[in-house]
Picture 1: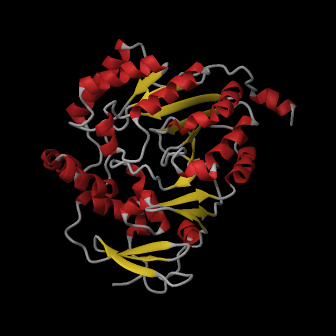
Picture 2 (picture 1 turned 30 degrees about the vertical axis):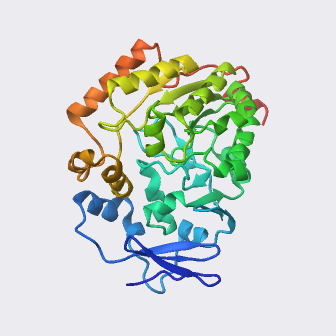
Picture 3 (picture 1 turned 90 degrees about the vertical axis):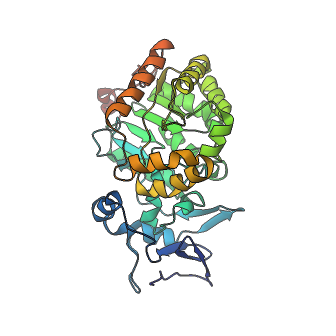
Length: 380
């Protein structure tokens, strides 16, 4: 066994799920123990290509580099019962999106990690870049990006073009935002500018706190707010998304935004087989979205990489044991569901969308105070 070397005052060592973990005042890094079984083909492809050396243990004496090194030296900001908040020094806030499948060019995630603890969350792998391999740490170690507004201002001067999506990996309105207001500081930057295409994705009604800022942004830029609601059933939602606001609160936030004239829609992401994929569930969601004043409605099937499987499969075993084997059979070798099932879900979403007169995606509009590129150059 080889352990990571930690800085700072005396560390506390414990073992959890075959992972040896060291805790210090301002950092937490972990190292995997011996494998408990053979890896799937999907997991092997991921470690060899997509994330390269991120998943391998750090050798004794090997220095952490990049964001893992920054995270190791992050200042502990605050701690509560099961969650610690850290400051993360940042070199960049805007991240270029290179995937042709995504409808945006840049992404912003004000936080690393997400306290909502959604059982299906695909983004848990992002903590591995910080040297944190235990998937549970994604919801227990939250990193607030330092000096986000100042860095963003500098980057926006260099990058004039391209749509920007806020909250693609972690929720910008998770509980940490109440304390640190990193997302609000980013919105203040956009409120001072014009002529950009922006979107925000969240599953929190905390976004209503910033409705005044959003109103200003939406008049000067093209802005869409995507509210994620997987089900209208509060009991099922509590199991799937244990620390996220209730579905009714999210839909109320959509209503508040819509009343203010802000473009808002509902996404049923992810649509989970035999849990939230029924026509009845999707229709109820679309009904409530229409009532709330949503302009669009969409949803796609569950995406389940190995890092997410390690949390989702035990959850199924506990809460829905009859589904576990079917999920294993369909997701162990590939993270996407394709073919006939994917086609069926697309048709269901299209059907309920048409029934309730909702668009399939955010629609372009002309902001009241939009500034075109020629106009911008006149004022520079």
